[in-house]
Length: 267
Ligand code: PAF
Image (cartoon, rainbow, N blue to C red; front, side, top):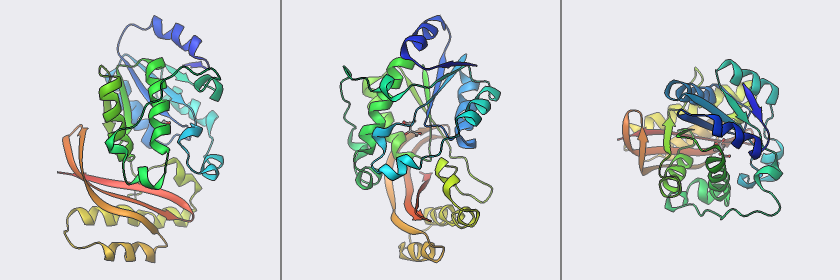
């Protein structure tokens, strides 16, 4: 597995590749959810590239950025074992050089509300870094986890305009045995917290099958010391391996001071 730290070295390598390239952008602290994206990319492309870059511009909260887990050595090891061909590890000044000529991308309508409302500036940060990565990596297929549902919708929307030849593939959420959606942030929960957090998936799965009002759900989550930020159902249009999904229950909230999100998709 090759490691690239600069765009220049990467583009020399990129020019040498002839077949389809699958790309998995990440911020490191890799878990089984990321590996599922990598496997999906591995099964459907001749080459697989992963980027690891903790993008400061998408953190609306400095503390969250400072506390973002860093497991780089382990990440490189698991990626090489997963059959990845190349890892792109740019520095901040590679991604955001002083004389920046990149035109700022403005996220579309799907960035409104939910994460867009509670994390101002977050999706601006995401689309702008992803736009650069798409431009440099130049993949045929790019893979995103459905746990970050609104991110999938925002990227699908912006990429259809700016990168029309690139296929955005969304991959179902990988879960712990107890149902907790895998997330790099779970590393910051205590063991007890990780057990309690399982109730989030339990609740949103029940919401899917009921039309009852959801005050009970918020109270129920509170009993597990989970403070809900939002819990709602939304209309979506998301391409998945099981077809187009048109509805979702989405959750965001806090446990042990850690912000957790999850969703269930349905038609
Ligand atoms: O989902 C993530 O880890 C990030 O938002 C991404 C897509 C790598 C952009 O920094």
